[in-house]
Length: 110
Image 1: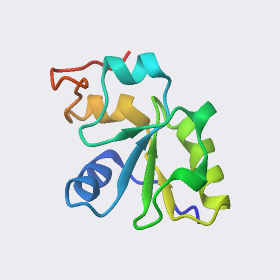
Image 2: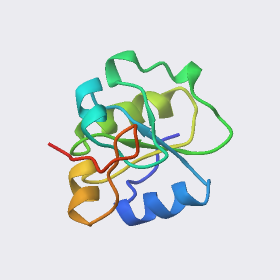
Image 3: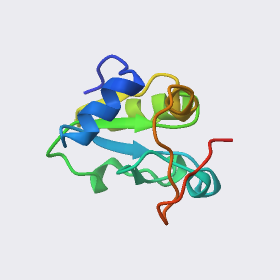
Image 4: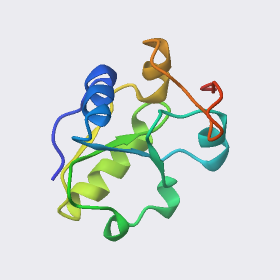
């Protein structure tokens, strides 16, 4: 079920302690440029809620919060617990939170 948005600080805290799964639904090139540490990547066009783990809530993430809002609605309609990260990766980066590439180097949000 979809609940209220979560801010970037709360999403980072919950992901760090394993309480939630960060799900980045941006396109492949956006992910490759930089993402939140520990997030998993499934582009919105490829999203199938049946393939997602149901053992913990999911926080959907995109660049601004729009696509992740759509993802959260889809995931919630499938009966999974989900929240949308308000402001997306733009807000994450603006708050000074870490952005990484797959190789661990510093990433960017474009």
